[in-house]
Amino acid sequence: MSVSTGRPGRRPTIKEVAAAAGVSTAAVSQAFNHKGRLSEATRRRILDAALELGWSPNAPAAALRNARTRSLALVVRRPTDVLGSDPHFSELITGIEGELAPRGYGLLLHLVSGHREEYALYERLAAEGRVDGAVLTDARDADARPALLARLGLPAVLLGAPDGTAVVPRVGLRDQGAGIAEAVAHLLALGHRRVAYVSGPPELEHTRVRRTAFEQALREAGLRPFAVLPTDFSERHAVGATEALLAAAERPTALVYANDSMAVCGIGTAQRAGLAVPRDVSVVGYDNLPLGSWLHPRLTTVDQQVQRVGAAAARTLLALCGEPVEETGVDGRPRLVVRESTGPAPPGGGATGAAAG
Image (cartoon, rainbow, N blue to C red; front, side, top):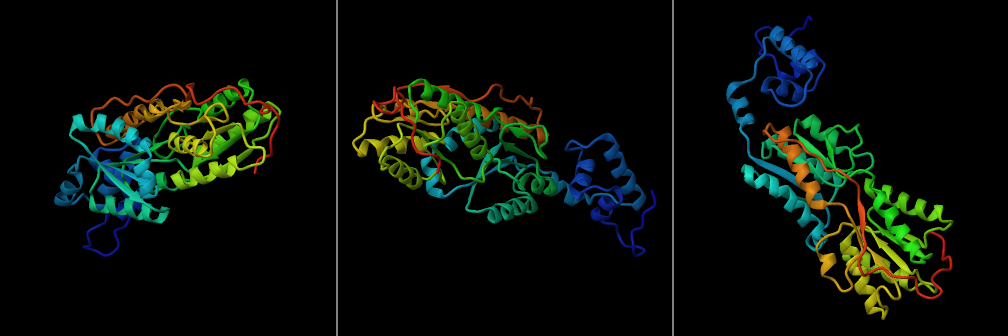
């Protein structure tokens, strides 16, 4: 390997080492700090390039960078009112904190409104050395965050079904569409044929996966969705979608929601319209949060083990940060939990309804 540092007497830079070794500057730091998951061949190539260039880490700066903050970031891209009203994140944080607190780590929660704000926040957190790693929520189609965090050299885990191709580790239950398919099968067995789905934001990976599972389950039964209405998970959108569905001349007999919070809004909206759940309309949620068992009627929902996923994500991230933690994932897939909010289709509910909107 033959490299040049440029001007004589000038101290080489980490960027020059990275260029000579064909890696990122984050990989150079990992090689010298004995962190990350570099192959031995890559580590050796980096060290050889640094030796030939005469580069070594600045000791005071390296010490400052290597000082652990014992803080991990959880960045949530949601409106503040949605976060405050959605117990999903309380369950997730409970699972994460259950692993962090005993090890002296804290969780730094940030709310952002858009992707640019989120990306800028990660860059600032990495530049200022404020956190040791980050939990990425809501896997998205064409998700740019894993590559960004890898470039910044900030350990991260992504909440989503493992796929074996991720830039950063993914933690979650496999087969995200299985719970929705099971919910549809349950409703069909009860005689429902006019079934609508109130989904989440279209850009989220699980929105696409679950909508596909919903439509396929109905198609296999020779049916089409009554409607599929996307929302931002907010109460306003959940109520508005439910009101629109129930105002149809021939309304749906069953409503499936992308989370339990929206399902609770749906039950309340139906009851305010003078309908009884499940006599007039059946309701299915998604998450299996504690509030579902406190309602009357108790909520039929899909269990995706939110706390367990949060705990597994925390363990994986702690291991990436160098803590002696066993990386144990979560097994199984989402499962339907049948309670009292679903029942037989009302008289006349077996007729096929409108096509998907």
